[in-house]
Length: 297
Image (cartoon, rainbow, N blue to C red; front, side):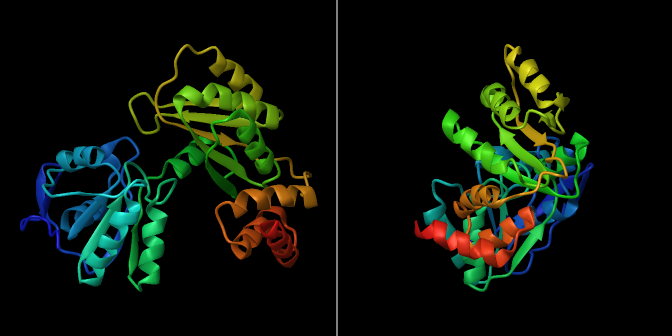
């Protein structure tokens, strides 16, 4: 058992606090996406007190620990070692320990491999406890000024031009604000592709959220694409929010097939049909049969 130092303390606003050892469970701890002051007290208590601290990159999480004077060992857990590290973390909880999982920034499992570990925990009958906090997805959404009653997080777009265009075509009819992550060296090309796929829509490009150079660019997608095409260099982490389609854009069978094709890459047919029904308003039973047919082919 990789229990933290006996003191299990952290420092907040100049005061040293003692963190109690949490009950055996897998804790999903959200960490700041930029400004380290966005950490929650509960997150610090779990990070300092858990028997094991699993993180995506020990160097990144190490900066957080240093800021709040937390001294403890860290266990790397990322997409390259998940197959080996995951079972060991599950065994630690089954043996009566507590495991805290945090990503480099934001909420674990959102665009990172942690979902595998959570799936294994549920299968093993282990208690899973989310510790909420910062998320680049919702932070960008509320800052964008775009409709927030329904939204769809689509992660990163494919890097190759053809695959990127096909993915955007799948997203055209989704009745909600689209949220995507993008790397700075690809943002100009991606915005150009978005402008072609959604020429009439407004969007917001949110860069370096919560950090010193936080910037939000808002406007029509063609104008944003032209603006970024003229920039010599773009730096920082980027989230793009795209306005939903007009209310009269009703999904048809072709749209449903495009949506199902995208969802089936990440979900089983039943779950994909359920999500497609929510997005299109079409009958779930019909969509489930279409999903089975597509999976069979």
